[in-house]
Image 1: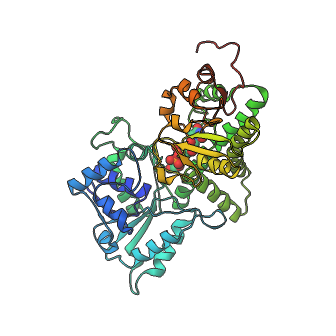
Image 2: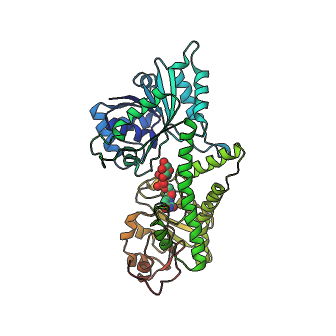
Image 3: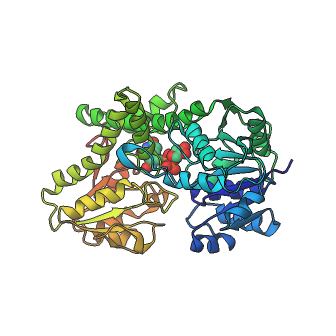
Length: 456
Ligand code: UDX
């Protein structure tokens, strides 16, 4: 059955949700208050890069199932289910800033002409469900019924660069609430995704797991999932430090660890640590929530601390080899927080570039997707990786873009004046780098080639 959906906020989560719900057959109205973004969305262009998203926006708009508006009244009148997808950036003392959610709630309350189901989809602090209900109750026009809204929590687990695929083929859909009718309506909206009944659906025989729970548990599932993944990366980065000291190679350690299905091979890549708009914000928020309720989450604190140090470590590595950073020329490959995106939010690459510039280094960076104008201040930009290596004393691989693997390392070496390649993402095979006449330094990898390598 076709649902009438509105999606408030056209950031990553909102735009992907709007385009994907329209793709699976629903009537979707996206609300965006920024006039420039609205113009772009109406032309079928997302205000950020995300693989496959513009195609879905285009087909949704031309089918008439998807539209965008800047008018809250129109969005409310055209929908029964409202997904709240506005930003919840890091606010004071580790807690997310809920001011955008609060103003949306007040505007929604003023426009409830018939019953709506309000779904929190952006990552919101644990306890938001009840807080939201109170804000709505207090903002309803005098005489309006509390029956005009029901609240459901539906955390989103999409990854940037893979967002459309993650939305249409999720590992699970989590719905939290205490109103069976509302939960069933939102589950219906997910019907085609759960049943894999839409154009180009994959794994058609397998139904997507659907988890029903209460609101607070749904909110906690999101934080626990992201915090676990972040902790898993910090764990392997800690193992990398131990590897460096004892002469082991972390890439081989993690590959073998990952063969145990209880551990799993994903999110075990050691490197410069995690970044992006979610992990740091969510781990900080979970720490802040735990502390607010009288518990000190030592594992999460350690995960944050290891991640902070991981960024300093690469700078120390360069300092240890070059001795002086002042006046050193450094070529940096990659600025985005991970491959497949132009997002610089909390990017380890950016923080490290800033540290290097602060230490007097001349930094020239190349990134295949980050626009020339968007890089960190004080960092020169090169049109290609070889240009970034021009006269460089050292190269730092800061984002694991797969295309760097097809670089001609001999030509890279010829452009440099030094020989050092610091692989902050353990992207390269050290033997290949050394064969090109470069000195290889990875994260938690053997300092020299092993004497014996058995075929795997
Ligand atoms: C993450 C979660 O994966 C997603 O489920 C949630 O909804 C939002 O946060 P995202 O921020 O897009 O998604 O990035 P992700 O692919 O998880 O990577 C996060 C960071 O961890 C990147 O900086 C990446 O380079 C780093 N990372 C990832 C590692 O350092 N090692 C790994 O093994 C995996």
